[in-house]
Length: 433
Ligand SMILES: Cc1cc2nc3c(=O)[nH]c(=O)nc-3n(C[C@H](O)[C@H](O)[C@H](O)COP(=O)(O)O)c2cc1C
Ligand code: SF4
Image (cartoon, rainbow, N blue to C red; front, side, top):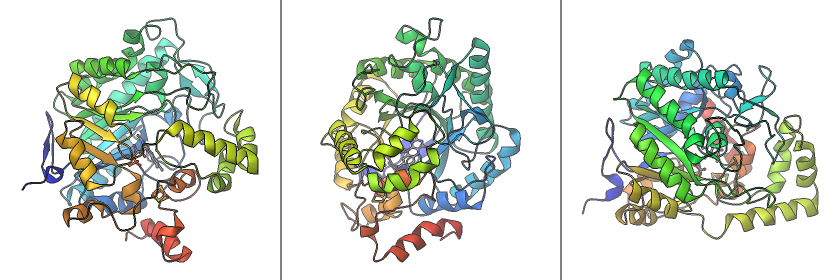
């Protein structure tokens, strides 16, 4: 019997060999200024050679003010093209596709770096959780940011990559425009859902103009925002009904696929779904203390026994029971409303669960992040008949809280024979193992 997991998936301008994709993740492996280096190539090859159909890059800023962390490669100028060309070429050698995630953080970031002080957003209200300051974008700034996305897509195409994804999820700039809880503008980019979606749709049309109608373009959407998950005094934000409309408009504007995520911030209790490892977070959060007006208070909470316990409890309560396939209900709603393929992210690491989701018509493929960090060869394990990997990802989110300071990798020591083995695996990205 053919296995749907290993059947190709066809888009308007792209075919991918299977239904298991590497979702957006990378570490602070690149150079401070946004130029890429060998460690990033080594990182992507860990997944390409182990059988994922496609890799969607981590957050790639289209301009420096849209960056969320130094040491993440950018696509803000033509001089970046040769690096991405080399990366794409190396990934293609493994019959794996490479899609670049075009991104802008807006008011949400982790560590800004020396090149800018405040982010640009739809609003001038600081981000509520960490208090990152921002400026409300003028119409000229909106216009030039739309152009930066178009140029980013043109550069990705010139680099020979297989497509681009707009990071229109998880609280970054696109969410800040789309969200009924965040966007407080009174011009044509605020107010009604049509107006709030205008920035995203303008970017889609600009990309089609600059990079062509035959270049794969997908968007990642937070289908439900749960904006008040941790902050009950905030508004809830966009609902699945809003996002179904946005997905339909995006399809009409020329998008080839939708990736379904959730949450109006990053991280968020629903994304990545799992635990909040307060002890581990307290070791790295100091990196962010000077980033926002609330970061000092958050650090105090994390380093206080009772504070940390209460925070973790409210995180887990807001997450809910489901981890694997947490966004499938929303994916199904969107899939029923559009004619283009729908992908889903969130907790997938059991072959039978993924198979059922696709056969049931909830989504056409899945994108996986942490379970592939834990088991780079997850796809090969599925192909060999395993339903779940021998040492599965525990969803502890230690990788997440480490990434702001340390190289990305699996930090769950219980999965390794020793701490030394864990550190060796994490550092292997620098020598290409
Ligand atoms: C360390 C880390 C970094 C991430 N970086 C990004 C990113 O740059 N862009 C993005 O869209 N999602 C990012 N994500 C979210 C993942 O791509 C994925 O959608 C999410 O973790 C849920 O999938 P999972 O349960 O398979 O991990 C990141 C997640 C983690 C854990
Ligand atoms: S640290 Fe490892 S086990 Fe924990 S969530 Fe990340 S990949 Fe999974």
